[in-house]
Image 1 (cartoon, rainbow, N blue to C red):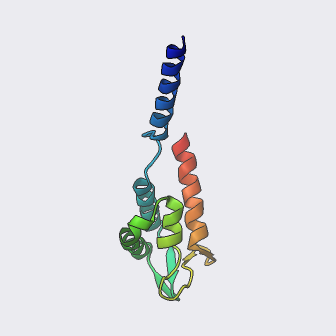
Image 2: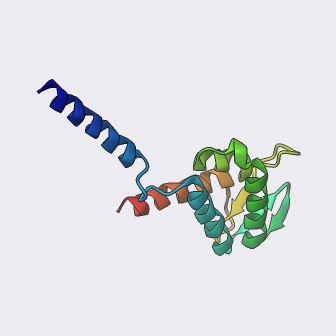
Image 3: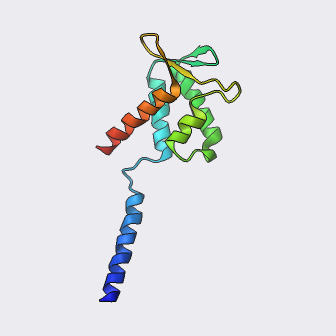
Length: 123
């Protein structure tokens, strides 16, 4: 009986490990790729160090910064914090100009995009 319980415990542990690597859970690379594409497709204006840039230019910069900092990026939140929200040279936050002309920090805009992506992925 103890042997059976031991095997059942091990099987339960193995099931937990398999569930942790659930293929339905997107990888960091997949999520970052989504955020970069979301940025490019947004057609919004991005402000970096006081200069306006297209959404495609902003996405290209995010991609380059992600590729450069990839070893330090373990989560999508790391990507947002380390590669997509401020200039490493000036320290200035990047902004996103909305259609009504209002600007919001890119950290907030990307954070909301990440939340929405995760909600959709859970369904």
